[in-house]
Image 1 (tube, helix red, strand yellow):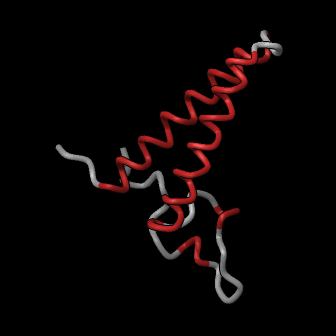
Image 2 (cartoon, rainbow, N blue to C red; image 1 turned 180 degrees about the vertical axis):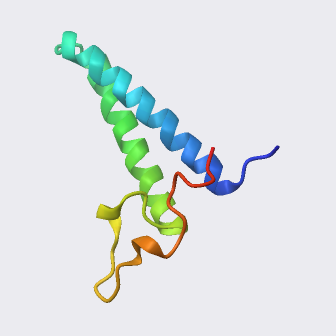
Length: 85
């Protein structure tokens, strides 16, 4: 079954989060590894860009990303984990 655009983007976020977690664990024991730190910054930036694109297209990933002064919009659409891969 083919993934929707939203599911594909959620999968990318999951992969980017996994990579960042792995790099952070490595950096905890190798804090002076400049190459690993470069990879951390690269993937952090990629994840931030993907998150922004996701939020712009499909709505917030968490309640802290709700950007409305008139109404609590977090409840307007299914939450990101509902019906995703």
